[in-house]
Each structure stands twice: as C-alpha cells, then as structure tokens.
Image (cartoon, rainbow, N blue to C red):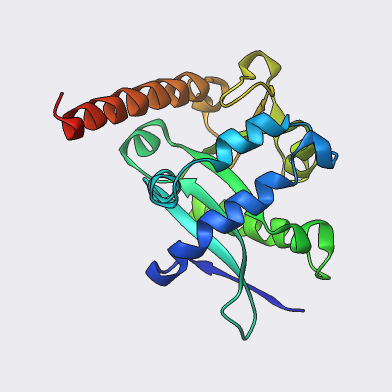
Length: 206
C-alpha cells in the first residue's frame, strides 16, 4: 500500500477530528496504553469545531492519504506563527495515525513519513529547533529523529499522564541551549484559556 504525504487542503479538515479521537483511543490503559480512560475521554470530548480550531490555529498541517483514494489515515503539524518565528523554534503538534495504520500495519510507517515531512517543512521555514511533548510510549519514536529529552520540563498538560519534553536541533545556533520553549508554550496555553473564557462570557451576555 502506498501513502502520499501532502499539506492539508480545506476539504480535509472535517476528517481530522475522527483521526485525532481514533489515535487517542489507542492510548487507553484498558487497551495497553499509559493514559487512564478518563483522560482519553476528556481529550475526545471536545466538539469537532473546537478541536479543529485548536488543530488549525497557527499550524502547518500535513495529512497522510492512501494513494489513489480520498482516505486520510494520519496527520501531523508544526506551529508557524509570530511567537514561533520570534523564538526561532516550532512546536511539533502530536502526530496522529489511525490505529489500523500504526506500527507499520499498512506495510509502511505512516508516522515516520509524517515526521519527515514536518521536519523538512520546519527546516524550509528556517526554524533552528523543533520541540514538543511525548507520551511515554512514543519516546522511542521521537529519539529516532534526534530528539533529546529534558525531564525537568516534563508536564501534565491534560489529565494525569506526565508528558516528556523533548527538542530536536534543526540547525546549529548558540540559542539552542536556551530552553525558553516550555515556558512560552505553557504561557500560550494559559492565555488561550483566558481568551476562551472571555469569549464564552461575552457570548452568554454576562
């Protein structure tokens, strides 16, 4: 089976939430993962519109498509916005692959193809570093692409599972030793939550 990796088009977006939820389901403790089922259900409880807003915000999205069909089986994204450009580093949004296409079940590593695409795009855009948070079971996957882990910046971003912080150097820079990204990321999350709360209050007329 051949897989095409390309940038997402507008018509692809409705399929992304189902890929996100299907991939998250494989992380359940009841299915051999590390995430308590309640954590996965919290992630998957978001509405399609809310989830798409998060996935698309300031992102360059790649999708994996079965060649010759319209079937999307995976997605991966990096952040490309003003804060990322100012820092010179891009956040690697989680790569999601349908369970039936994970771990080479399709005869090809869809996750590897998506990661190679996002790394190439990050280098093309001129970023010096890529950073992100890994689930415990995916740490080995990230190490294959040169990820270095920094346990002091690990965090529980959603739910109770401690996610492992990592960085991948894209080009040499004296700034790469400065680990400002985890602080900037969490500050962005807090700001986003505050703005979301304000918007909800305004819509409710209170």
